[in-house]
Amino acid sequence: MKKYLMPALMGLTIILTGCGNDSASNETNIKEFVSQLSASNVVESASINDQTLVVQNGGKEEIHNLPEDEFFISIAPYLTYTHPCEFHNLTGCQGELANEKVDVKITDKQGEVHIDQSLTTLENGFMDFWLPRDREYTIEINYQDKYVEHVFSTFDGNSTCLTDLQLK
Image (cartoon, rainbow, N blue to C red; front, side, top):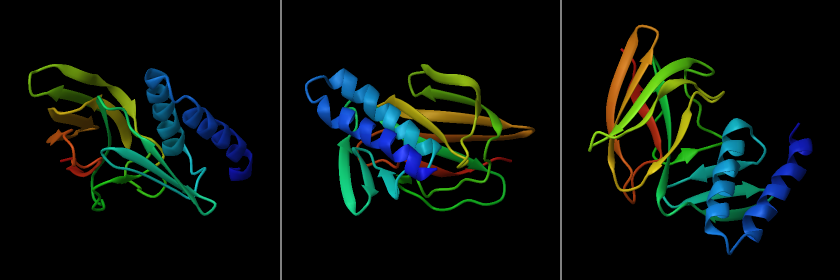
């Protein structure tokens, strides 16, 4: 399957690098690229920190800047097992609750609700979000009869991978 997806991935990479003058278009493209990488293992490795997406494939490394006003965060709630993580590996991190429906609410410190909906976790057990930078948030997750609430932030240097949210 990877060999069939590589031409599409390469085409998207060309689009990402070819739109240097349109920052809004670049931001949309990088978000779509990250979404593709989260949904399938079409490259050897892809990790994302607070500023960049680093993709390694075929012995080559590509670095893509993230939007200046939005922060990527990937969250994997768990019941019994997890792993430590600071910067999300789109192709390697695996959460416990794959393809499970959860209710998610993300509110910033000022009370603005950014997410309030039922979502299905990805095959890797994570949920990916793009949120405004430089804010503090509270996430509430309900799964069956379990609940977790956690405070996190989107400042420079903050983690892009939250794996310590145990549902109780």
